[in-house]
Picture (cartoon, rainbow, N blue to C red):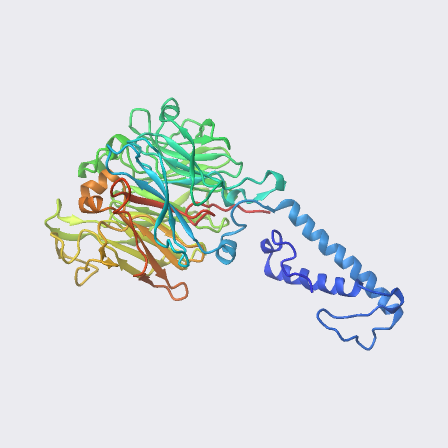
Length: 561
């Protein structure tokens, strides 16, 4: 029998029907070209040990032998051709390849912020054991300290990902062995070696903030690897801390290449980005000026539409030029996490607008090269007493799309809930799950809700293993198969201290939500809790989470044709 994988690196990239045909033909060919005596050839259908009645017909057997030989050579040629153009580099060939063939996660790399600015070990990367079969399940098993203060590590990325999966020469295939950790406050970028010992990463390099400031950029945020092997990071400010939207590029050795945007148009603000080379487009979102968000939140900040973002910026990918900016209304203030659908042939996606908790869909117009937006999810504000304003908005701080492009998840940091929407109908998402993990409007909160357009009663506090979940749900990470959603509690330490000081004092948490991938639905896993309240140098704050092999917020796929 022929091994159905044929080539573990090749056939899993082909359509299922193609693989089945290749396997059948190869079995037929090999079976019928195998002989012990040339004059006594036998014809065996694959898997059949009994010679058929015409097995001894010499002329027929010779014909079958020749036919089988040519078929075998033909199939081997197909495999060889496919290998030459799509050798397996890092990550997965397609999003669905990751869903079907990706392993269950056993570790999380967690950006962990030290809220005590006097503590010399500073922020660190936590390695968390999430293997249910392990003796150290739900524990931090290693800490990679920055050994410096005032950094505010925030988001993270890889030196390479699935966008580099297809390479012409297997000897040139890059390895996913470095994690990039930009810092919002110090402008430093830490490079961590996760390849030598994945369970105990080490600091490999530090890019000082002066490198960025000399290029008149600060506050690095989102990191993505590029198909050419370089690394690109979005930035949010100029050297003085004013708002500015651009990107910086580094080569594979983490040497500074320069800023990315070409031409005279520069975005007013920056934050997150995602690219789709098949359509020659990249889209970027906006937060605000570093000099404003670093000092903490003020209600008046969002009134300054120059220093606080409410725009989506579209770039021509090959030309590296900003060609369209969509001005959003007040409801679109602070469009943060932005995602194209994972399918690289889909020219649409979603963005979560934090301030007023709205989700917008963006899509290309059929009759032009321009893009449009439509509001598809609206989380209403709650009218309250005992707050610093008349209403509490949801504060939508993260969104995530499952790798099969079926479900969208988001967190409302102030309302305290995580939601799941079925987005099969792209313009009409359907709410299929909701879990409350804290927030500012709980049943025992000092804040009194006087009008709620969604709930009939306030949610109760959530407890896991006797530990109350403080703060609100923030960063999200979904397992490759879509069955487990991890949720951390820290947003940005100056804002954590302002909105949830009790969470800062006690330390943050990571919890796990079990997902019904068939019918939709979510349930809090009461046996899973990662508690950062008893860390070696005091309570700390977990933010973004990554898997060693990539995930649905780190990896971007490109079309291989």
